[in-house]
Image: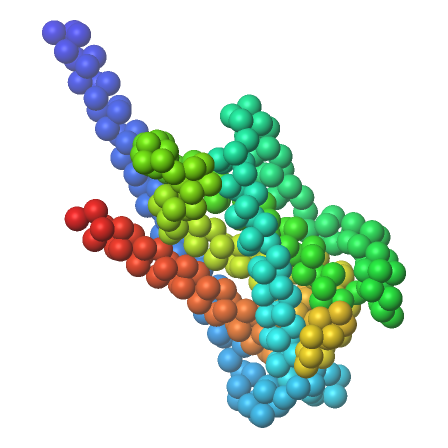
Length: 307
């Protein structure tokens, strides 16, 4: 009888513990969603006055010079897109091939060494990378390309690609490692070479996860602040030709970081900076939505193929 009593007490204790854990998980999930919603509405509250005090034609202009009330957002948006797309073009192919090398080519012992090394690179603070870029990469770019300054969009692209690379490599490697080994064995049994198995079986099987990794890399790049502010020159100008890739630019994140600490609260400049932040938030949100839609379609397609 006493043993039965102890068992009942243990069950009650376990049930109470599970109840607490479930409520904690629910609270954490709801808090995360609520935090994102509050950030969004805060940006709207502070950025919405821009559209009532600053003419739309001024916001769509090509000049950013807040001292004289010029609030053209076009050079900031184009500068952000130039640096982000450039970093994606460099980082995504390199990240994919590096992940394939780690997951499929190297021996197991080497993989256990390389994977943590890549993840350590992801933890380097952006200000440290920017400082290294200013000391090492900026003079090198100026000397090799023989241009007036090494603070260019190209320099920002190189450093931003370096920062994005660990995220892409780590996620893609996990995706490839999750592909069942039987898929590879089936391909080899059919007479495929190792590279044919990787290209025709492993990569298609992990397509949704790979696309998610690529979108995460783009989101990581577009939201970066310190590195691009330190090495891109911070000149609000519109890229009009390929040669402008080797000229200074200014991104939206760098603009907010550089000017928010000096602006008068409640001024037009203050509200425009929040409008820039709102624009950046919407762009990042759309990138994440696009990633979710791509993954959802790939999952549905896989389910149809299996059925």
